[in-house]
Image (tube, rainbow, N blue to C red; front, top):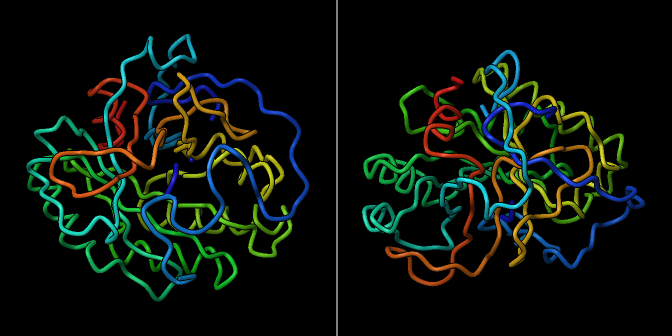
Length: 279
């Protein structure tokens, strides 16, 4: 997976307004490749929370991460194979998103091991769901996710679940995609009490939702933009990013081969506040 409100929480970075939304067909962009699997893997085709979750925290004044406190993270799936989470922790990784589910029939075979071992190593972690809007409703997929790894507890180590939106537009209009996402969000919130994190790229969001601003007051943004620039391109409709996946070719002690590398926009206390739903 690559990396999802009005000046709301968790030390997000103000965004430069994106250009006009693209037409509806399959998203393409130079910022990230198109296809399943930016966030660790597609398989089937193969807070900061907002009211009422948390109180608002003023965001930093600048868009350049070089001037801001950030926390190092990764996202993984079974494609990373066996992971030594103690080594990952010792390498300075503060958080991880771990693939749990896809559609309503698939659970990542390494999820249980990764989720438990990350917890035992004291890496703050969350689960993510790879969306397949063409296969079933948002409500059905959120229910499956919440019941197969995506639940949340206030234990200092669990982030709210993430919805991974990427690939094509699944033959949906922008309006239909908006409805699907909101259906997922509402169901997940009802089952867990948390706002789901939205993982997406500017190209996907602008094309497949029409640059919809309907999640800006609901979901923290995990933006996917592989670049060496000091800040990512933000999807239209989101003023700030909370997480940023900035490369798919990073390396971390304890993981063989390449791994997605991420940043959290804020210091360690803000990351913990997002995990614990406090501000």
